[in-house]
Length: 118
Image 1: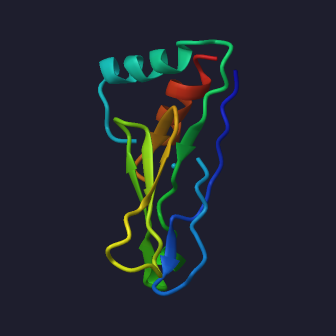
Image 2 (image 1 turned 90 degrees about the vertical axis):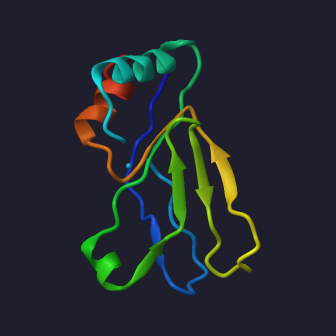
């Protein structure tokens, strides 16, 4: 089993066509919820689990008025990526992972629920 984690940008300047990196950034959870998250990753010890964490935008990204183009749903493990140059009617592209952590996640929590059970 493996867990891959890294940092990546989650925002772009308005009008830029480049995409934000979708590398591994949690909602506040109680102990029971942490235990459930850890158990989900343990279901099949022979499978590689893909965990994504989106970091918060940096001060420079905020100062540059960059927009977040990534929405994350920790309950479903889904990430929605919006194309900032597309027509407003174009739906965001969905990507599903074993577990996702948003820009509010804390490093210790990510470790406790992903790497420590391994």
